[in-house]
Image (cartoon, rainbow, N blue to C red; front, side, top):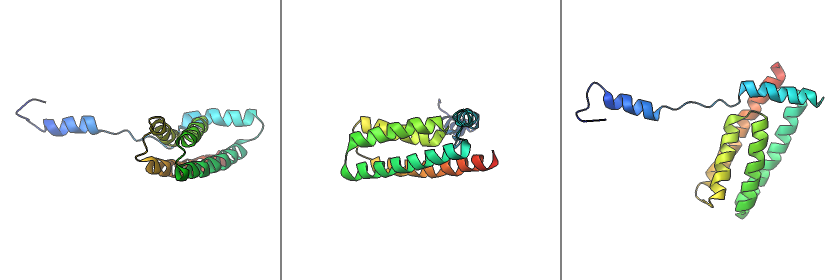
Length: 138
């Protein structure tokens, strides 16, 4: 931008730079691939989602314990494992939250770890809701 600012140039520049794309909870195209995998293993999508939920709930419990004990490496390892599983399930926002937590742990950035773990938990709840809806409605 140059001075003088004319005709809303500042507003347009800010809108351009501050525009956020909203990431969907899941990637519907990739969910189809996960469904094919579930069917190929002869487990079925509902069981596949159920196993993901059960495993992820346990991972989040381990994240909470690692946070309480200050075990950064355990926190990083759990975030990494849950990120990979989330990617397989096409849970984009959960995957991103896990990646953010994993990155903060690798930098030994203790500030904000509790907030990041809470975000992982929130995004997990959102992902489960959507994945179960997909399981119900196919």
